[in-house]
Image (tube, rainbow, N blue to C red; front, side, top):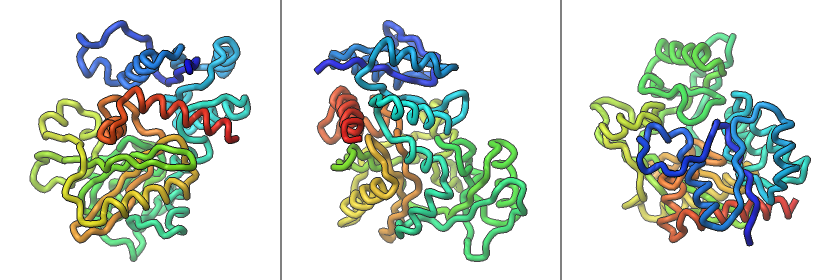
Length: 338
């Protein structure tokens, strides 16, 4: 069946005829949107792009005039604020408009990391111990929180604010990094135990019946001696640095006996605890002695053709067009179930 698909993005995105002659840095910000639109066209769907929306009435007019069967949601922010994107999805639900990806209630949990961690702790999901440092409060480490620690924002994603200096081994450095998060990102800060181990990613598709895709792993390449093996902002977004150091991801090989099964079962359990739907990715650390720790659940991860999620799907025999169709179908099934 052919669908009318409205691709919604925070980018000011104009579909180019061809990107083969463009530099990767030129297209990095909208490459995923371009690849999704090309896949939708290959699938025979009628597609319209709506980007950089500044007023809700523009969105409403697009729904009324184009009458999409489904909105392909690629919003990461609205009016420059992450959490405002969730309210747009709430509007879709009020309008009985189908959309792809996770529901707004679970996305809000994804942005409220302290509450998310409290919920998962209650369900005894294995995670690093942590403490929250709100802005305007005295910075004092709880006695039961041992070093080394990694300091993060409680609200930002995509490794924003994470650098080698984020891993601290003393109270003075902890205070400095917490203050950096408070002042630079204007959010509360969180410090959690630094877990040394392999960094693993699990892609999941589904609403009620869940499918885990092959486990993926980040190879930190030739990091300078003494560096912590963490996905810093520079490692994630600096293409030249990735190439220089040899950062890459691929199928996780030589996992300990039974580890893959335990990770997949835990991934589905977390997905259900948080009420996720559509698609998500779970980030884990696997220690040398076989312990598994959840680092972060990621609703609506990047669906780009060359990104981990799509590559893991390809490893499972699902090409990119098939993956995009599956994401559309899950969005329509979620709306029908509601």
